[in-house]
Length: 67
Image (cartoon, rainbow, N blue to C red; front, side):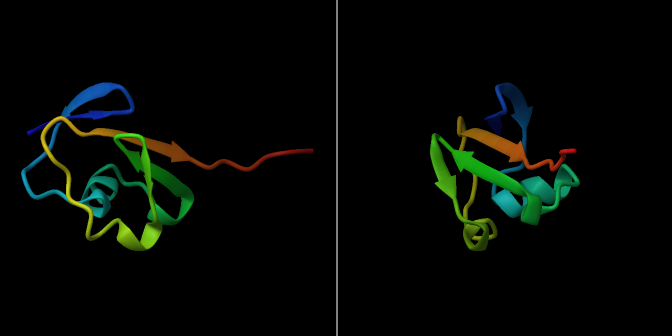
């Protein structure tokens, strides 16, 4: 099925959870924020939130820095 991931069309398997998506992208769920269709998803809900055809998923990676 097709989703929009950070604005790009991506194919994912039906039944893919947000946690599964992040694992496939090799992203640590502890250092990202995820929203689906404009709604933020809490870290504890990543495994139980399943993607649907046409979902718009935004993944933001936190990066530290400074002086």
